[in-house]
Length: 179
Image 1: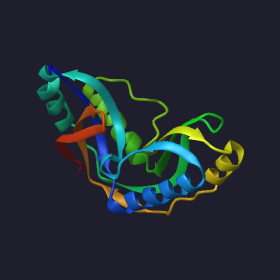
Image 2 (image 1 turned 30 degrees about the vertical axis):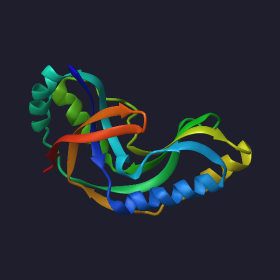
Image 3 (image 1 turned 90 degrees about the vertical axis):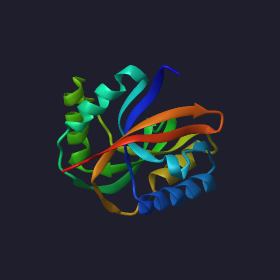
Image 4 (image 1 turned 180 degrees about the vertical axis):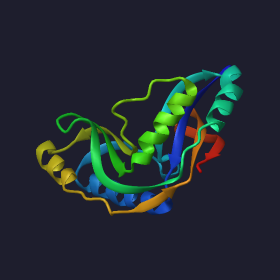
């Protein structure tokens, strides 16, 4: 294999993963048919590179090591969907913290990339296949209020993703501490 499927991730603490599991159970009860993201794969994606030549890996690692951002507190704040409430494809947990955008922008700057203007720090819970009784179910989903969990973001990780029939397999290639 001459390329790797890469992304930048922030891993969340067990407390957030437990809250995601409670929400997953509620969604199942509400009649949401979905492929739920496994606990070990739940993360916040700061930047997705996709297929990247292995020959660029050391250059990428060096550039990421130059990112100098302060650690910050993130707060689990809401449940959201992509692309919209009329056509739900993804259900996610959102976080409040300006630090995510700052870190996303700093990484993009170091790599010579244009930052996303609508960056939303989120943890994907489910990729929706179908919703039974859509009007009622959407109303129930909109009423879910995640616990107000805060945690310290102290690092980001360069991760490779291998797509397999059982789902993606992630491997942390390198961690980068925040100041």
